[in-house]
Figure (tube, rainbow, N blue to C red):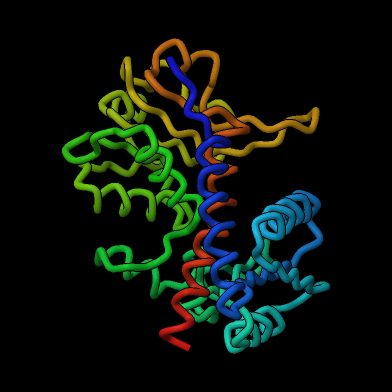
Length: 282
């Protein structure tokens, strides 16, 4: 079994971002990402700091818009304001959101041309139609890692465990667009382990630590672990039982060091693409 090194993939993407950012700046455009933070959750704060640090290292400006105890209207107003700002090229809204507010609802107020994390249903629809768009960065990271491994996805059997609009559904659509044969599993799936064992590519995005054991994995399969579950000692573990599955899988992403770094790098790439697009669609 070999680990899929997300940090190495992210490093390559970030080098490309830095070169593209320098070119944009030379042409008079400062690529800018705006992050709306409607929560005081410490885990979210850590993640936003890491995005800002990564962005500014590669030449992308990052504006953090912290909202204190906002309601739906305040979040929507901020997203609309940033969407209308010509100096902002990418807009994302962090979670968790206040009780009663959903990302699906407020994401519709991000301009599709600046929705670099695929929160607007318009972009999810474009993804379903096979049109150019930005998929949610975590889902896009799944495909980026698979392509980095030079896997033949056309005709491959792929199983995605999880059906969220942030990871599961868009990851399945991305795999379909690569001509994989895709099954999406969820809490009502019967004999989940048996379905997963049919996969050449298994994507675990369910949010339950260690749920995917060795009996879920076909020998030699490629397993992408999207889970980021906090442990009591402050660490992170995935949805996959790493020790057990590593004895069966052909390739496996570690947690941390797998999907996470690539997700952050893709947010920067998407921001660069949005900045380039702004020159033709102001």
